Figure (cartoon, rainbow, N blue to C red):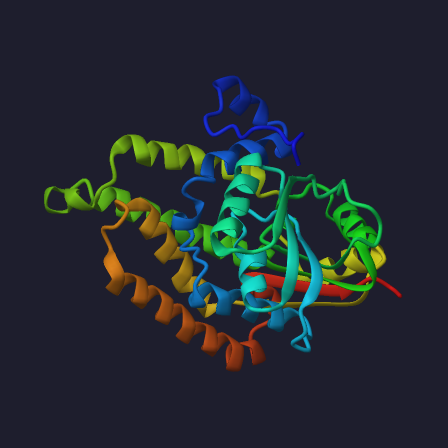
Length: 318
């Protein structure tokens, strides 16, 4: 939209100070700050690896008969990871990527253009979606609900813009138990890596101090933008109160999260490009194997609230 605000990739000290008391401003500043490096930080791509991952999350959350949804909306799209890969997988035909961060919307629309996908972009607050009633047959999001102050209001808006019978699918939401152990693993990994790389033989593995300091400031602001963690049953009740039907929450990544969080933290603590292709394959295939263990073994014996990621789906009543 032409009236969308410009990104703020370099926030002033006054803006950062204000963000500590304003979660929405914090989300804008943090994600504008991260927009240029976000895909690399989270190993996001638009090739077969992430197409399969996005489609897998969709199928894990919701039934799908293989026919594309005609018009899809993504809330909190970031750089477009979820919707753009779902479109490449044939889940959706046309799409709109939205985010509270102008920088992320710009990144997502650039990615869509490079992929040749028919996508519009708009800066949108998930509690006040500026589209008419019954505009979409699918609304999706990945790791977005935990950034929205009023999750029930967001669900109500999602249901309003969905056509009757339309479906929403949200994935990648942190559970309360999972977030606790993931953050602890990340903190331990960051401390160990930044301490050991001070030693002479390992200094070549150390990022410049100003980059480490910037990452630490970003991590501190992340504590403001990550507003919620979820119990799957509570998340189901929230969506149902908002008016959804057929609501179902599932969870994934228990053993996989035990590997994934230390791996991602270690990658962020060492110079870009230092680890190489073999490391990337180790991380990816290790995550795949542990995800198989989670899906086929551990989800039968471990409570769903202990898994790291929550997924939720439901429909608008006809």
